[in-house]
Image 1 (tube, helix red, strand yellow):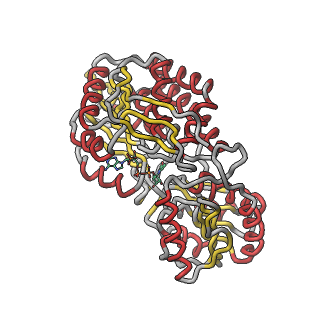
Image 2 (image 1 turned 180 degrees about the vertical axis):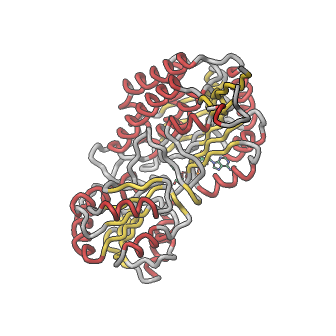
Image 3 (image 1 turned 90 degrees about the vertical axis):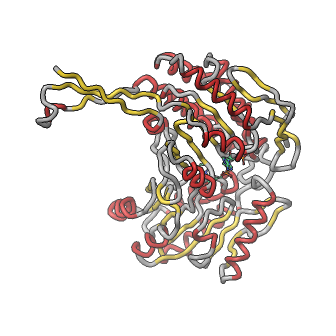
Length: 475
Ligand code: NAP
């Protein structure tokens, strides 16, 4: 059930701005009105960029930026319950997962404050070459300029935090466009930023039509970096169009995990059942493809299916719900079509595969061919495939059989197998004896291939959001 509807405005130049137009935010669970936000467009984005430009003319020293980030962390920690309820209401995320996201956003701010305090350059060993002898050189880290940030619906608080907090740590002003389905969490965070004493113009939030706002961010030369998290199609097009800017992309995945026969099966089934279906699979690193060594396949399935059947489906506002709705009915229909494609090609549904009320039950399928969409594209729903394998070579080839490369995992007791997987899985991150859905906010997180071109995590994002400036002194 939705909480009382709230109303929020855009944040531009330190003012909460109405436009006369509103975007309604409705619960993905029951369609109830969660809130409404002012709708902006190209004009508001232009004003937000003016404000950001103006703010950056009066740089904030690192100690002030760090103190503000620490205060945001403290304010968010005080309002964790409200933040989690906002995430849950607008994204349809079960409260259990929404609370985890809100707590993680506190960590993201805390880590960003650390990065603001230690932002520094390098000393260059100039006398290491004859050309440099007699000189002293060092680099300064300089803010890259205005950051345009575009965030997705599925982590509407913490993925905004992963863009805004490092940008402020780096000394960059931000124009943020949150996902239209989930702007309330972003605007709550913006309120905390202003409460924490962030001066006007350093953070501006514009909600509205994506392509119109995106076009301004792409075209305006004052935007030096666009940080985008979302789908691969939108992300790579943005990058093509903004060829003179740094465009950092955090995109999708079709997350594989290998379970060797020597793995602790009880532990593996527990972690994988939770991480294939949490938030109905709508995480970029939701477990999607499970490859199990043939001699352990039956035992794995027995434990795994029992855990999947025990997941509680229902209202995301209930504290004991594990699996809630998809973000939109059209997504549910798309996934049902993908399931039909797989079953038409011979796949067998071992669990779920059908609706419970309006919700898609957690679904496990076996025998899906490698070229079925559920096997190689990003499902982004409560569906995973299970497939037996005979050799680690086979498992690695199957896991790599996707255009994506964000995170992958292996469960095994064999260190050599684990290290081989770490080397040969073509992904930005590999987890061992942990679901590849794992993320702690200080990690370098990001993908290769179609999954993106950067690493997030405050320490890494701050590097992206700063330029190295070389200073050479003749001694
Ligand atoms: P999406 O449809 O690509 O939207 C993401 C953001 O881009 C939204 O704010 C959206 O605005 C905006 N957008 C859409 N079209 C645009 C355009 N032409 N120009 C500029 N902005 C545009 O993705 P989503 O459905 O929200 O998120 C799911 C995807 O994100 C999945 O593929 C998932 O794997 C990926 N993801 C990746 C990571 C990661 O860290 N690698 C993390 C989370 C999610 P509107 O909402 O107004 O359309």
